[in-house]
Image 1 (cartoon, helix red, strand yellow):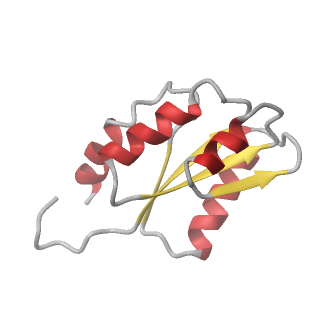
Image 2 (tube, rainbow, N blue to C red):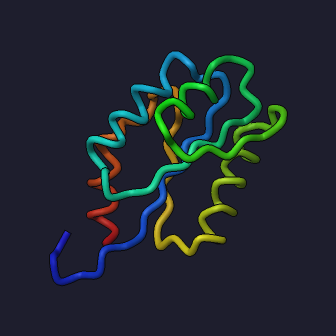
Length: 111
């Protein structure tokens, strides 16, 4: 990003449902490549250890009491971002299908 530009407040939303196998690696990689961005995991009623892993990593987590589906999880994250006045929101999947390394490039392209 151009140093003369104001840096946007960026939130990465990670909807997650039963992603104990991948959530740690996704979050750790996001921390490495985007330490200046905030992250929030929307735990969509996971029945496995997803929530515990997110908590152990000290990441912000919003929890649904039961599985409401990907769209509702994303909606929860978007509502969170609006209430906290983020400038930009990016969503990546908790299962690793989206490469966290692409996030800073996307933001740089947009700002």
